[in-house]
Length: 314
Image: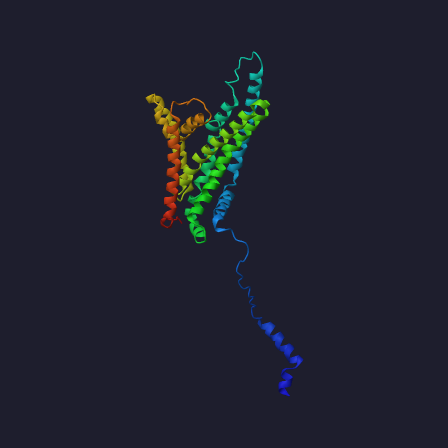
């Protein structure tokens, strides 16, 4: 009887209420672990993930300001091209068509200090200066290389992201200006306009690569983006200024070979069939630009090969 009373409804309710009064035991929810079985990025395309992350980090205010300046730049060059073309077509205006041909304006847009070179420099300064330095400082190499991302894919993704932005800033304005040229030209000049477009795209790619790859290489030498940006600004600006000063003092064009913009100007004149503005041979400038790009790529590969020995700042 006593056992029956202990298991009766009244006794059970009293025992339960007593347990609740003392505090119920915590409930453990077993969420378990489910292995991800969704789609994965193919191994040969892992660099695209690195590129997307780098581009996402570059979508900041300075990029939009640079694009606004690029649009304004194209608008000014387009207006000048239009009015010069109309003036050259007026009989007795005193303007020869060969003096103001649109090829000249596209070349100036791509190689002069008031063209796209300063804009590409700014993009490379901010996007490239922090591309590898930030990863070295924050220890992100373990994030990348502990996953199946090879160092070659990491390097390719970083280069595509930075050089893609610099080439965009260089090529897009040239393409728009060439389209303006085609729009205001008579039908018999369409082949010349198409050739001008090819020249503008080719030279724009050279400008973008020359102002993108070296700064990424400098970014691999430090864990501080400020040091990298200051070093790139010094290399770019001082070589430009010092090369011009020494060339004027010595009355020789050869000192300007240390300047990336000077080399781009001479090489661009060769591509567009113009006489060399600095009396430098185009092949010498091409060799210097090729040497800079090759040395930058070699430096990047060497640094990534020894990436485990890079000291990460706290």
